[in-house]
Image (cartoon, rainbow, N blue to C red; front, side, top):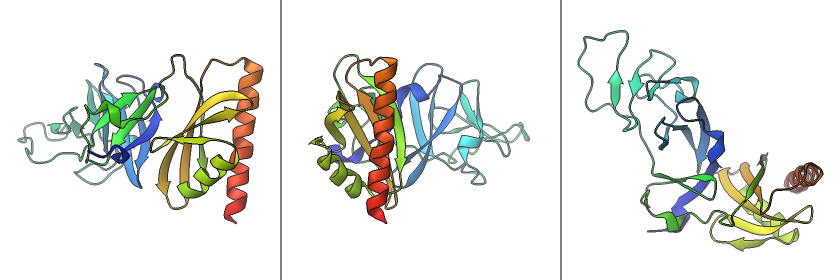
Length: 219
């Protein structure tokens, strides 16, 4: 199993159990990510298999994900559970949403391209220090190699396939890189300890400068 198959998609606290559906990306694959009321996280292809509508436009009903277009519902096993417009129709047994292995580690939701198993916790090289504090996620108009190169210039050191350790505004930090496309990367920044309000403001300001520097070098 290859640990590189796992990617940090979004912070766990972005998901509210049984309430919201959040867009994520896995190597360009658009995902619909949601948490059931029992706490399990789902990472699905962001397309309803019925008519292709984005599932992130839908809602969660009775712990099923309901598509916004025709209301078709899908269970946490990604199988069809209900067709509200035609309740007497037999449910299509082979109609399923494409799903991906998913796990949570270090406050992040990690999704696999399918080469690893959900139980392979060692695959996720997320920040493991107790009390890690989420700073912010930033989208950067650059490929992942440009982001990594700038992180090195900022004194960060690679730790595993996706994590970089260093300082943000003089605070120990971890930045997790999620490559979206050749022109877009998301960096999830975590601080090792809970900052003061002033420290957090400074850290977020430095991340904006970091993004500006990377994007300037892409032009």
